[in-house]
Image 1: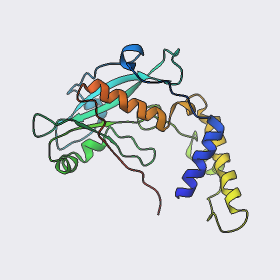
Image 2: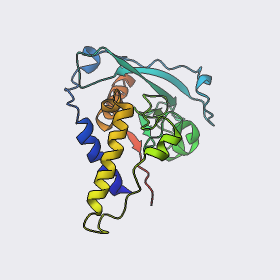
Image 3: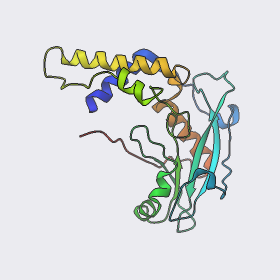
Length: 222
């Protein structure tokens, strides 16, 4: 439920803190990582199927944008389907949300549908955001058994009683603490701030008009 997501986000903020991101002016020239995307047609290693031909690439970005002294990098898996109508008007980045799902394969699975919606005039760019699929995968539990044994109880309606909201927040903090225990090394390197910066670097490296055209969604239980 949305209330659970908000509580969990609040608890994560308490546990991890919010990173301070430095300005990205001239970032491609001053920070480590790739400044160009080198597309390849040899994508069989991904195992994706597509009704339209696609390209792939590994694109390197800084691992920690909040630490300009860090020299560690992270490789993002990218996929691309060229616009049917050329010259293309630009590219659209896709992140299916979930939350927690990778996005490199979303454009291959729904290639014809997305191309039709966009009139065949835009390139489709898929990528696995941090914490998903092939990119710095984030999982709070080491096994399915741990998930059953260590997961907090299901939340209850926030106005069900005078203590319900506090119980939900406590459960969310238990879940956040478990995640910190399991993923302490990467917990502060995933999230909206870092993914947004990764997307900005992809846009810059595309060498187009510098505009971020983005399609995404957030799925939640009814």
